[in-house]
Image (tube, rainbow, N blue to C red; front, side, top):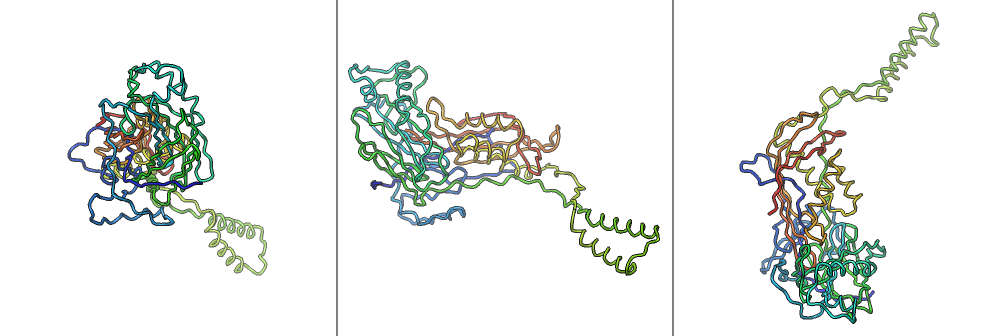
Length: 475
């Protein structure tokens, strides 16, 4: 495998979204649990609900790096990072004109998912599809749909990805017509026409990958209309670096080298503290009763014990002591779960459950998401929450990128008994925010929710079993 020249830059793609359910945070909150993953700066990638990422300031003053997570033991110290480069702007509505052919690729490496995106100018794509046809001045909605449908089938095998030596299953590409320039693009509204000199065609492949891959190899076959070079910018954790795929090489290799932080582990599901049970030594009781019945039987039948009654008595007593450690049954005499009546008590239960709901969507395989959700959610709410959260974590429009939470905080305002059974109902607010990057720029997301949640004891654990949204606000 040839070596590629890579240049590291501070750049970020802060992942962020909100699954929560709550309105503005009220004044005079009694119980609050906040997880703040460092300062949320433009284009700074933050691991979802994980430890804060070291940020190198623009000054020369030394900054102490935060301690690494115990779960991460890199083989070698990460390389020195140069001062941060100026991040690309957020997308704007300014008219941007394409003056030369464009071919640009982006590789976004995130926990459990890697996304590869490629952008070509629409004029180059059209000239490749129909070399003899005259290029239109603008693309209508029907023409855009025709380009998307045609290129989706033709590009199905253009990109492959392997983690080390393991080749991954190739998903169908998502194709979109967008306008602008790489790093400053805008999605098109339904039915909107776009000038050809402002139109781009974007291709996106999403691969399910390990949370912290050591090496990735991207192979590209989409060499259209004589293109021979495809510049690549890689985004991982808080860093980025650049490289290139050449038509004679066709493969780009990225190595982790301990630079990409792993996601934080899930929070433990709150356990229900049970009172100390009474231990009933059933084995010892059966032994003693059986020996006593046997002795009475001998007396009634006027049988004599060999050696007399004293040895029998000591054997019977010793057997009772030994058998008392067998067949011990715990008997709970108190209530199964303590009643939750205080806001502070509810806060310690509700916040971890909601946090794990967000963390479940760090995964991108549906089965994995369900498995992690089931640790904190139970009953009919499980499927409903999955569908609603997928919708909440997906960007608007036809681009389809899913956002990942970067910063989350939850507050319980009121708690009351569950009138339908065990557990309690809590009125709570929570907020989540972050930034997702694609097509070379970033999309901020901030949602605030207010809801009533029902928490129920399930097999000695607290689970989220009901959710009634009162208000949702997107900032």
